[in-house]
Length: 90
Image 1 (cartoon, one colour):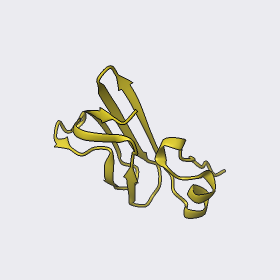
Image 2 (spheres, rainbow, N blue to C red):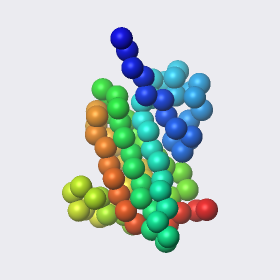
Image 3 (tube, one colour):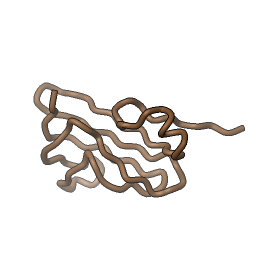
């Protein structure tokens, strides 16, 4: 039995494009007042480049504590990134 994870709408892929490309990335943005939490998940066995549109600024990776531009980058297979900070282009 195979299980497939589809991207959500914040990943900036149409469902057809995600299926065609075999992209198994989920990203989401949660707003806490002036702060933004950016969550990126790679559920595939391949390295994926991800971008969360409408989010910019400096973020702190909640796992490593490092400062980074979290809403974009490369995720290794089954890697995830949870970051807090930045601003949202609402």
